[in-house]
Amino acid sequence: MIIVANKRILDFIDFLNRNYPLEEEIKVTCLHGYDAVMDDETDGHGFAVYLPEQKYILLPMEIPENVKEEALKDPELERDFVIHNLAHEYCHAIQDKNGDFEKYGVEKLDDYADKFADGAVAKFNLEYNSIKDEKGEIKND
Image (cartoon, rainbow, N blue to C red; front, side, top):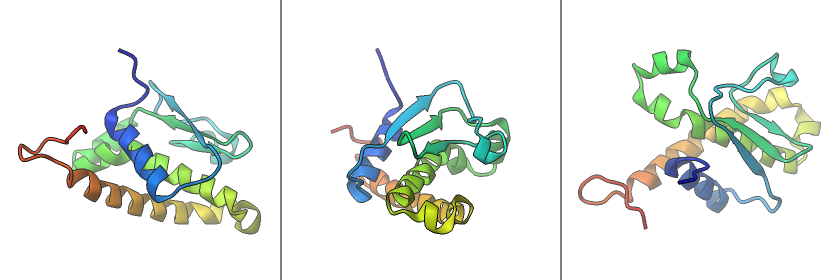
């Protein structure tokens, strides 16, 4: 069986497309086996990155060890780590479309992208958890 990403991530992509649609196509490249992306703009690494010229999001699918250690205290951190990074970078795609990079600079937009990701992930979790069946399992319609 060939898979690109797990169902939760695919459902989250669908959620982003429904709730925060963009007219232009943004491609996501899932980097299995990686927990970070090397990038000049992030002083050598970042958990994920949006490439505005190519309209790509590079999304590492593994969770860094230090995050796994933190997740012992907060299991939701590990569960939502990859989708949070995807939402953060998707917000940068929205900001790029709106011309915000030129107006404000990427550094100033990072805080907003984190808040956007926090809100999108929380909203997704509410929606995702509301489609559980009586056994507590996610319905796969």
